[in-house]
Image 1 (cartoon, one colour):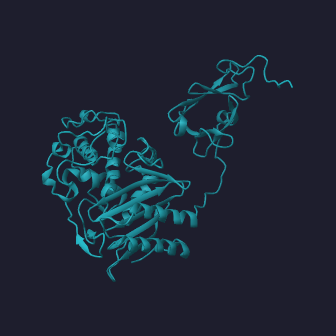
Image 2 (cartoon, helix red, strand yellow):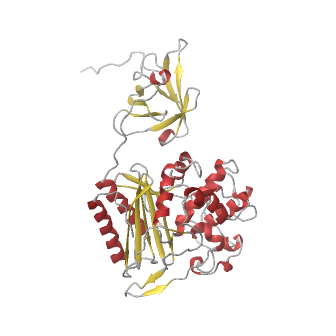
Image 3 (tube, rainbow, N blue to C red):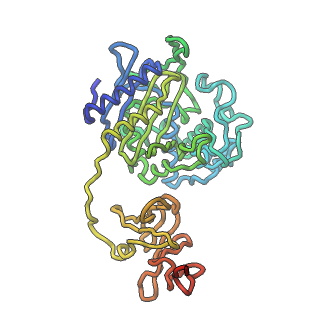
Length: 459
């Protein structure tokens, strides 16, 4: 196995130590892991119980529910092409399911109220012939919660999304996946079927160091929820795409939307949230986005940190024992802390719009001081001049107004109100008035300013 040497020796040893502990303590037949930086694979490592046969970054493992992120990308592509709207009810594009009132975005975010699993036998360990139709996948009572009220993870929900892709595209889900994601991104070792070399799935006895092979079933209609096989190399490439986008597949704006929370905070864990086919975890001053996965015989974890430019993947061929997602997160943190990202050099803007430059600097919302700043990408940032508070980035609309991209003011319109002589009177943002002086006498503050102005308090 060839291991890239882009990281410092101490960092590489720390990464190797972490996966060695994970494989030993988790009693995994094998474990393979990788770290990427700025879209490039910079480290791979593995541990195995078989002498001389350690897996490398090209050995396939089943990745379970990481498949859902691939399915979500296919759905976002349909939206971006104008073939559907995320607010559309499923019935509009896939009639007759019995769950047609659920919207596309509710399925993506697991807020459709659908059951977590299928009725009947454990679908991951039984033949797909037991579930030949969507009616078999959903059962007679597909709902467990009111639609749109809470996050409830649903494998049948992603089965519906896979069938939605097929209905709108007119081709099988696997064909759309190959042509629209795998081939453009060069993921040649990712697919719905295993291709040698690949790991076999094992169950490890909880109280004895003995093994039992797990069945490897084709998931049929459930494939969009968890079918894929992949490698650490391919998944690092995929994670890099999820961080930055690729216009051949999905834009940076759309993958950022996937990484934006779209569901209530997950029950029992205020640090976790769910976007559109992606999980987010928040802690230690860092936000990670990605997905976890498991199938009988396999566990997987994939995370990215956009701020750090880092990605990490952990795959193991055991049903339980290895906390793959936790290990992947810790690998990413090891690199982030030992070798923090070196920022790009500061450079002045190549050009500046005087009308925008005029708006920069301090403004007052009541008595709170905020600052408007120009950014290198042509947008503007409005937030507290110091300390914490509401902050948002705004993109220009080309007509002297800006639309919020994130934070409290996401989707809200910012504009400069001007006097008859052309000078700026104030900023208007969602009915809020930002003025150059706190409650200035001539400021158009709703309710007006006291005519006596600012004063002291007599002693």
